[in-house]
Image (cartoon, rainbow, N blue to C red; front, side):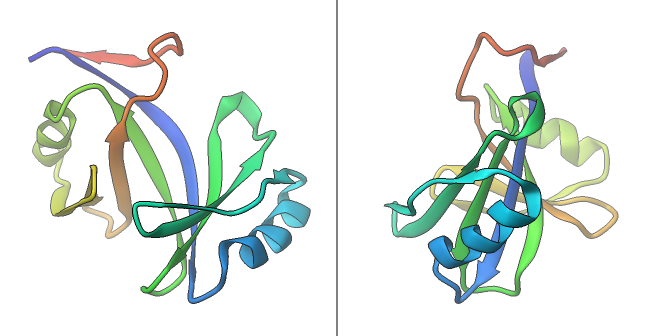
Length: 124
């Protein structure tokens, strides 16, 4: 099935650190404006606004080791299938996104597309 996908942005996972606290450092380090932390579906996030190319950058409080991962937005679950054909594997479905692992060992997520107006890759 035809679908679309694009790089959505980067999530800075901070183990056991409040999102506001992590956002203070990353805001200063990256020159981005930290927004107040918020809770959503039992998770805690703080957006960092002003990233180039409209990328979404946010800090997330997590219970696993700290890391940075990227998010790929898609309008269809076919994106997970496409990436599996390229060698990725599904780790698990969490709330409303797929956690994937690239053949290189890097974790990333496939999330629902937020804006239809932003250019995306079109896949058959």
